[in-house]
Image (tube, helix red, strand yellow):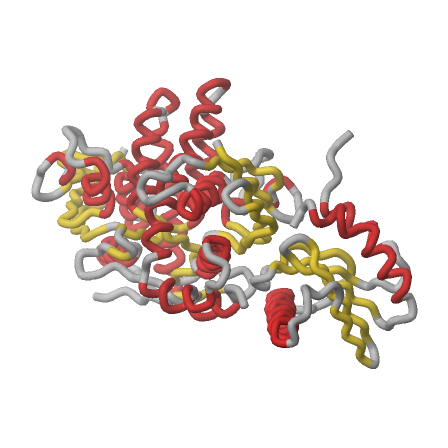
Length: 171
Length: 193
Length: 119
């Protein structure tokens, strides 16, 4: 399966759209710094805010894609979520599971590789954004509202693991 | 002759990189991502709403710093990219000033903000105006264009802050007007730190 | 007292009878600010055209060994366009005709120093 990718831009505003969703390019510096910022502001719950913002911004994009392209089954929806992750430059993901939860892994990761390019390895995983992304994919695939899934990053490439691994559990 | 922004914008607007077989977008010496703009707005707004008093001030500075470092590194990569060298540089006749005009044409073409230079005093001050930018899509009741602030300071760092990578943080940028606050345009003033 | 804004100065110019709209364009063609009635005009195209005009005028001036131009006036059957450098930008005045050209020139002369501090 290969998802449809249609770029368009508004020639008055020069805003760019990916399959109808307004998108914007940023670099690994921005993403790594935003992640570091989240950790520096852990006292206000910033890592979870980052994850929730990812979930809430990705979900409409996926729902819209499913509706426009007649993607019906949960398996197909998971597959679309996995492919979309690569299209937007976030890395190579594998995911499987059921309504109750599942697993996801990354063999390439913008977040981990970007952080490493900037600051080197570290001892703990930090891919909050992808936790939110995966939560959105599972919720969209199984027709659940936001915050239905708890996503935990069990291993991170940034710590030296060969793959980043996530477990997903229905709340 | 100086840099003609419509020439730059028209030639570069349809450049939109996709993830490679690894799902990564290596370009301009960095890894690029292409996320829903709404993610950045939601995250910024929710973080700001959660931070109070002194923490909020620290957060605002950190938000600008994210874009400042990003703009400095990626901006340098863009200015030295094949695209910039072949599209913009042939029109550069006024040195750094023209490179900055080209940089804002690229900034416009690639969808960060439809913006340009309103005033420039070389090495001292620059005023940027933006007539459309994604950071104005939410109306939180405060100025929220931290990305444009950071990137504008970074562009001036690249132009006048000394040799890369030592010029970072030479300049600072404040937002004086914002579409998100009901103004006609966003205005950003870059001055020496 | 709050500092004067460029928008306020442009509004003041717009009060001169006969002026329909004002556009401030950067040398690169970026439309920095507008005032008045521009209808459905494509501002990006207008900005690009003004920049081309400026470049042409400057090239001609250089070829003819003229000093920097003060004003460029274009008259058509149903419009008058006057371009004046302001700081590093160009002030473009649009009027339906040249009946009040004298008043427009006077107002521009008075306000250019104030506008120049913004561009």
